[in-house]
Image (cartoon, rainbow, N blue to C red):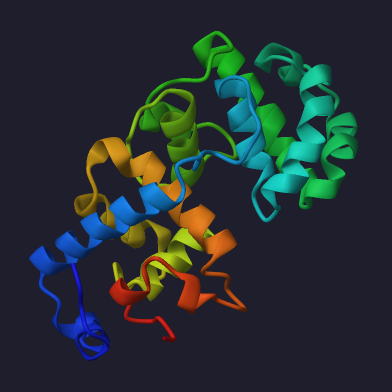
Length: 227
């Protein structure tokens, strides 16, 4: 699929749904080829660990979370252990991830809910996950897609928001509206992967302050490319 720069400049207002879908298919194919190793960047061994790590990742880098979680999981290897944790001790262990008081409250509350309502196991549905303390749709999508292989939606973080807007796959700022725009453009079995691919591309090439458009495999498909 080739589109001239003049044509790309008009995509925001005139691109049909069919054309946008075709472009999205090409975007996905190219990113899959470019990043065959794309995966969740949060280190985890099971759904409980991923849920904890995702809660910790709010307003924090994945790299920092990965530095904190090994000791955390050694101290609290299960929801039952975390449910009985001392809040001040949890706060001390996660302080470097920021907003540690709120996160400690969410983590302990989440663990207590898992023990009380799910026998300590992380549930496998969006509805059950979203009622857990500290868990919204984004966190639920991460857990379902990466721990259980359930593609309930597209995880929309800052990278996905920024790139999907630059690529004119959405015009919205709200994560829910962005997710609703992205899901029809990609096969359901690829929804979790789409997030990883956009995140990888956002970190390695389409960098917020210094995008490397001349090196971008999507430059001829991107209305925002500076080439």
